[in-house]
Image (cartoon, rainbow, N blue to C red):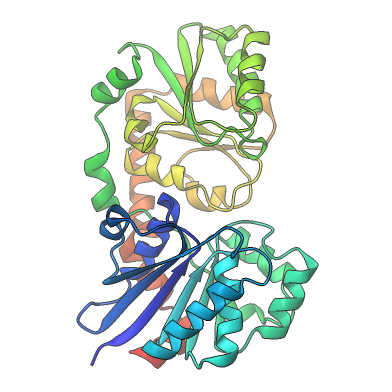
Length: 376
């Protein structure tokens, strides 16, 4: 008889689906039946198809139901857990974790794993108090990077460090690689001339991603090399500020703001280098996408970013346009042999540390061994 596994997610945006699929792949269908619950969002056949779990349930909770005490979602989860006798429950992000903490008071679940994807999630006093009161020894808390894990260890009360672990994000490269456009196709879609050197940035236009520093660094780069462009793929709160800054720096014709592009990762080979200049970043999935596409990387030493990049790209201090410009110049000057060596190193790093094969080994480490013993 197969054992039941439950994965709970707040909603079903692309990152949420990918997180659920990452954990679904841990369990052999011959021995386990995996169910994914999306707390919010209307039922959609497309989402059901993209979700790899055997069973997909849409609670379709309203935004108001997900605020405050969240009694509706808690009741629904409690009913589901009592009915199906889950051997393990995995929850992604705080709202799902909050609901399951209460459910676990009234329903015996052998093992629970709570995955946090952002820095600062447990810094608020009410959350510290709630988790300290409701957490049990059968619960593990995981950050998607060592930086996130350490942030949790600093901010959570009554949880031993052994039960706060790192479970990194991964990239399903076998699904990802066929979807990436070739350099020629990607440049055609973005209207980039073949011989133009292009730096690319993919991400929301928000303070944390710090494209302002990128614009200042690119202005310095342009003083030395005129024939280059910068493409920023994304939208957000500071997009207009960034456009105004580009004009003030004399870059109006050299910086192209594409706005949000669905599945923008498909275009990553259009860039001669990806520049990720965040000042706060729990992980940085776009870095894995660049590695899989064999695109060179320049990034900042912020939070979880160095854990992803390792020695497979150039790392600079955050918010330092001079350092970033120097790295951009250095990247521009690399020979094709040096670029190939860098991108191959990145590709192998992705395979060795951030593939599903690597994640399976990481998940069943001794820190989570008691969970394995319970359900296998």
